[in-house]
Image (cartoon, rainbow, N blue to C red; front, side):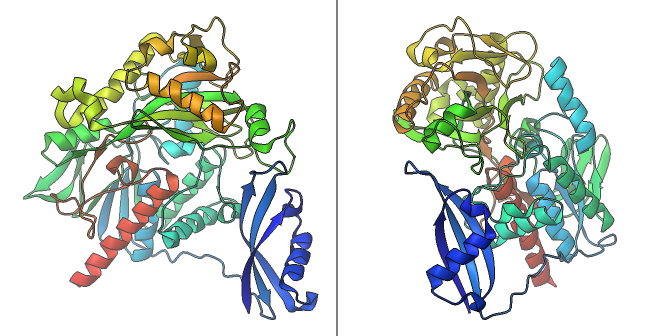
Length: 519
């Protein structure tokens, strides 16, 4: 017999498997000999009261033998199988490729950027010299944006089976087992590159292909059916193309629009990144001066409404760093990341404002591309207000809220550096007032959050794509082009590593099912 139950423990107790076993026996009122095994299903923090607790969810095996079933993917040799082109090697593309291997199809992954090891060198140049390679940076390259921006695995996706598949694939390729247990699993920027490389080796080992420095310039479309893609005068032929380019591939949107492929505008969000000391966030969230060694760096999630627009935290990075995520020399874009130990003395988060289509009247001449043009305007404006290279404009948090120039700035994790700027004056009108009011509201929820020891840095502009590539709800094909499968964040159907990966898996399965029906 199996029973699942929840235990409320101290952080230290939650790490002691013998104590968890004793608590389980006591709660179930059984004999010690009757408990044959205990499996921890999930852990989550309960910080609502002064004394922080851990919710530990367990499955108890009572007078029943426990058999651990190791996850073992059934990858086929697909060297001579039907090819499926995948444009982009982010989570949607890579996990679609892994699932296609299991289903017996040959994934051909085309990535505009470099392999993960070479990509590291280009990222180092951004941090040290403000030199941006437009095809190899924090957004582009093997693994996509998530590889070097944190590796958070939390998702609101309700497709739990596919979420479990994604986590199992990650563990199989080198992630720690605890990502299957933690309520908010996290791999860490220092560990993700090795896992991504292992996934690539799996694809190649089983007959798939991965091509780097391969920018898709044109889609081969005949009679509204996809036939392949062109890259630097080379053609890749296939009757099915999974388009998983990520939300920063603006040139892909432009190319699709030029070729008459239907796109649709959608709401998105932009703002700034705010950085506190991790000690400040710990003290607010855990109600203590010094965080317990058994507690992780504290996180937060905040949301409010200001003038009929959502204002909310995005991609919160406890114990992390702010990184330069621009994809061109004349932009400043910031993002956040955390190493696996989350042991930086800083905590940062995007603070963004919802942008709706009616907010884009100044850019309506660009039609469907208005949202992208607004993003570009904001990124270029931020660059103009910054210092040399990727030195970003910044302002102390209370100074921003009260409309004062910051005469000095606190230390920051942002390596290129920051320069004082009156962001309360030049931030786009859709953003500045709502952010100011939002920060006031957040201080009421987290007293002490609004402090001049914190700093805001611009621009947080790549939270999601301002466009969606419409697709049929059942077939997941583009509503106009047969055989074209828009996937993940860039297509407007995901928001993060896991949800993008789940979308890729789902598309692979739909392709497999549709082919079975034909046969």
